[in-house]
Length: 120
Image (cartoon, rainbow, N blue to C red; front, side, top):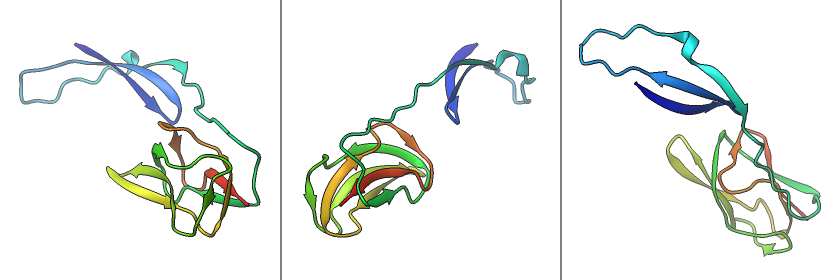
């Protein structure tokens, strides 16, 4: 048997998986999947909120943040990298301006529409 820790929608579960050598399906034991403690939110806002929000176009995980609060950016500059569906997606500045705040940190999971950063 192997024990894994799985996070689903921010809730961690300890799951026990039985290894079998046969070709048939192993019986499912739903009692072994007990919720563990809730994962802490990974939100690290830096700077004050700006007037223009940069939002996540799809659910995924923040791989890297390329800018910092107070940094000037041009339209199309890469702000951060979002991994979704095993692909790295560049989140770019929608217009020229200054980054007012970074609302997520590297490694954070985000949903579609979540605010990633704000600009002025």
